[in-house]
Image (cartoon, rainbow, N blue to C red; front, side):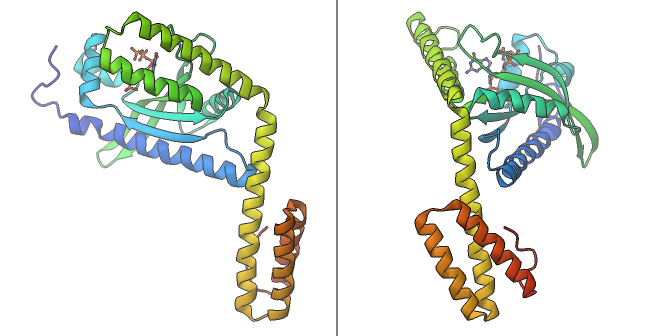
Length: 273
Ligand code: 0O2
């Protein structure tokens, strides 16, 4: 099969995929930060994105006997997004959220959670159709969104490089050690899942505290710049005390009061605690 035909321009072919990868990475990163700001917790721990290299595309196309003119329809991971989560629970929640999105259409779901691969690989893959508008017009491309836990991501990245090193000739002893370590990963994910609620609550409290402290500090700066020295001193003292006592409730109340006073003084528009 010839993958370097005259007239076939790989760079142009990859433009919409490259755009899809960048747009989707941005969207999922925004989703992550909005959830953190709003709820103090995001199902996404981090996002990675990659465009498959021409070399890997050709290798895979050869493996599956995919013709050059069939790549767009039959190779669904040219554009790849990976959403790494802390817990398996987050994977399920994210899969549901992806299916509800209106800017992409989930067309295939591969559930390697219910049925892990023989290698030990455990993840959820969702193939979506995604519309891009490039300078050359509109195009719908397929993109593979992989959802996996941080523990499985660690295992998979190691296993992937070993697979790359050994191709199809990985020694059996190494294969079986990898299966053992995949089982250990599954055990870890299971154990962490059991204390998930406690961990999530602690994280929410921590980010709520960070946010409140940052906002009070911003409010205090506004107050200081406005010349209300006495009120500033009073708030600054209460702020230091609440911080020292590590009293989140007191900090939140202080923030609310500061917000009210700034409003009444007609300064610091947009300051919210
Ligand atoms: P890269 O470098 O990530 O692009 P395939 O399993 O690839 O022959 P299919 O049906 O397209 O066929 O695959 P699937 O199940 O959707 O998986 C594609 C991608 O999932 C792989 O991409 C890997 O990223 C990941 N993956 C699947 N199985 C395993 C596994 O056993 N171990 C690891 N580490 N990753 C896996 P590529 O093309 O391999 O590579």
